[in-house]
Amino acid sequence: MKKLTPLLLTFSTLFFVANANASVEILAKCGMSKGYAYYTGSDPKGWAEDGISKGSTTITVEGKDFDVLYSNGKVKKSSRHDDNAAIVSLAFTEDVLTLLVNYGPRTDMFFLDIKSKTLMHTSSRYDGSASQSSKLLASQCEVF
Figure 1 (tube, rainbow, N blue to C red):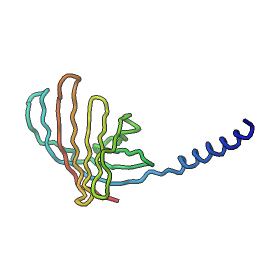
Figure 2 (cartoon, rainbow, N blue to C red):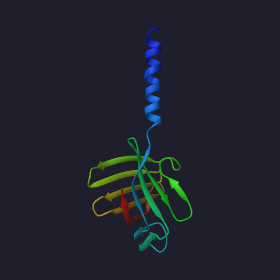
Figure 3 (spheres, rainbow, N blue to C red):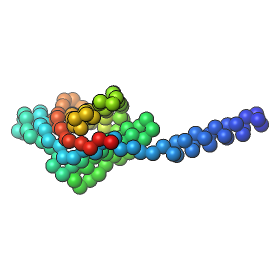
Figure 4 (tube, rainbow, N blue to C red):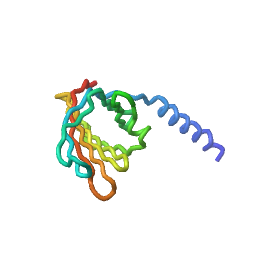
């Protein structure tokens, strides 16, 4: 056991240093979004133009962990850190990145077409029994 202790200490130190050196990489910065929403739980029901004219969306990766940083022009948040969202990468190639983000009462899908530099964002909100609204928004991005 005495010989294992220094070895375990060395491995744990290397693991800590490797994780401490992981840096956040920005994959895309996207501007305002435009699109449509369909509302079922409010009046008027049906289709309506939607978007975030002063908003932005930034997609980052740290190691293997993706995050979606978003702003409505006033408030900036991190999906993973501020909203405690579960984020799953469904596809990540040189052409496309697809993320599924679940916040509890809301599920979002982010589809980044890397070549056209377009982010398509779907979002569905529900109250536990039925969908309250679903939307499809698109924005232009800088891709890094």
